[in-house]
Image (cartoon, rainbow, N blue to C red; front, side):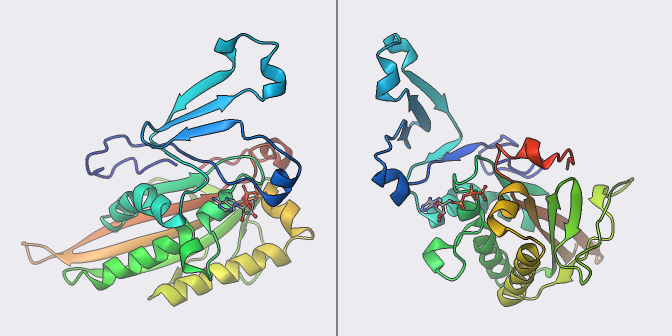
Length: 272
Ligand SMILES: Nc1ncnc2c1ncn2[C@@H]1O[C@H](COP(=O)(O)OP(=O)(O)OP(=O)(O)O)[C@@H](O)[C@H]1O
């Protein structure tokens, strides 16, 4: 999950952070006797991959375990709250300060990208990074009296090389990427909605998700092959010592990528 490229990182000076989360085995995997091939050492931030026992006898012992280190690792017992607090919170804080940041989940189909990014919104302890960021942003705003805030939300999907505005009335319309001298690369004509509280931004997400599923014939297949990007823009204005209003704008891109094995099949070459 990359961090903001410009924010002050509160002691962690990398602009990109990569964390790994390993989900629990599904019932199906357990029933069919699947063997776990991954060990996670949270303290050492290390993940080890073992060759399955059937294969290891033919190889030297050096070849059986491979260790990898990350900025953080989360095992099958990890809680949504901890992932948010340790990995997403600092980045969202910097967006509130006027910097840009992106969080994306990458992995094969079924590895837990949607669970980590969105989770189950109706159950507090299962809420993923996106709904937790809603609560965080509006809680912070309600505790800040020195600045006026404006929060806008957009939601788009990239599928088969084309960009669809999930909040547009016309779901047949396709949008184009454009390069702007000030804004940089952006999606032309993408709608954005002012949201004043958690309920309003939740509603925006629900509307987008409905358009995502009604636009698809086979929802699972479709969502596994499409990228979804929820964009929150936080603008704030503060009266400075000079008596003038100073504006800051931060943008948070929250991305649920298509399954990594599917990306070649989507034919998507769109870059942000
Ligand atoms: N950390 C976790 N704890 C409990 N269940 C999880 C966890 N991660 C994923 N799951 C479950 O595993 C299943 C697959 O997860 P999910 O749908 O998030 O995968 P995905 O990577 O988004 O797949 P796709 O690329 O097809 O969209 C779901 O039933 C989800 O609830």
